[in-house]
Amino acid sequence: MYHVLCQVSGTSGFTEDPSKAYDALACPENSACCKSDHDCGEAANACPGGHPDGRCGYGVDGCTVCHPLTITVIPGSVNLSMAGA
Image (tube, rainbow, N blue to C red; front, side, top):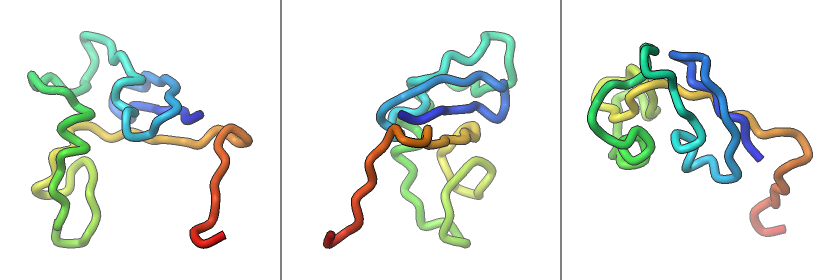
């Protein structure tokens, strides 16, 4: 389980799939969240990457992420396995 926090509006939610983090949020209508007529999660997941410093995220030139999220793993809720283990 993951806790998702919108850094713009302070809205939070929970998801079992971090790639669907934007779907876990319902930012208030009058907040400073993205007002574009698109699906924020699809826009973020569709970012081609390849940015000058190699990172992808809100405010990075050419990145399609429209507002920043903090995604936190809830301790004990996710089993991680090591590659090759």
